[in-house]
Length: 213
Image 1 (tube, one colour):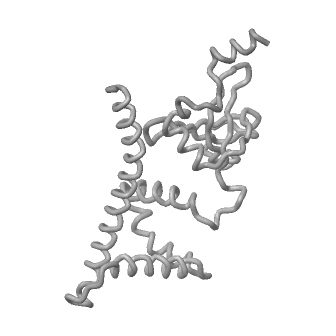
Image 2 (cartoon, helix red, strand yellow; image 1 turned 135 degrees about the vertical axis):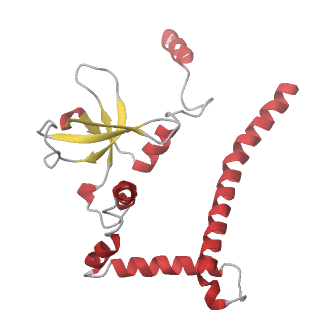
């Protein structure tokens, strides 16, 4: 009876925990966005306040910014705005890294520039590693890198944000039909499968079935 209660509690906790954390993080983000936006417009509206006004204003400003940077000639103006962030030593590193990360999700990226999920397998080795191709050529890399038909593959690490980037021959990689989001999510949790799944038989059962057949 105690074991059964423990199982029910554990299953309920596993079900409620992702939902609760997601709702909590979303609530905190919306609350922070509302607070920041209201501080920006408080001098103009005084004490007048309608719940959600700050968030609505923030979304509107982001849409307006997206519209402006999509126009012709906006690139030059944006370059002028970015000038202080791209020249200060420490700020440059932080800003460039964040901008490169954000640019990856830009809908303006060409299809050839998009990352794709691949299996990395070195010749003569039976080990397979799942990674993301982040660079399709190495011609513009600094001197010292091996040249040829090579690609950059990012290998994400499990249970943490981080990983390694390796430059390997293209024929070491094999594309797989999997989205980047699914691959990153699977890598984050070390590709763990759902325990106790009825769809995949256990090794012991498979050996038993083979013996009886």
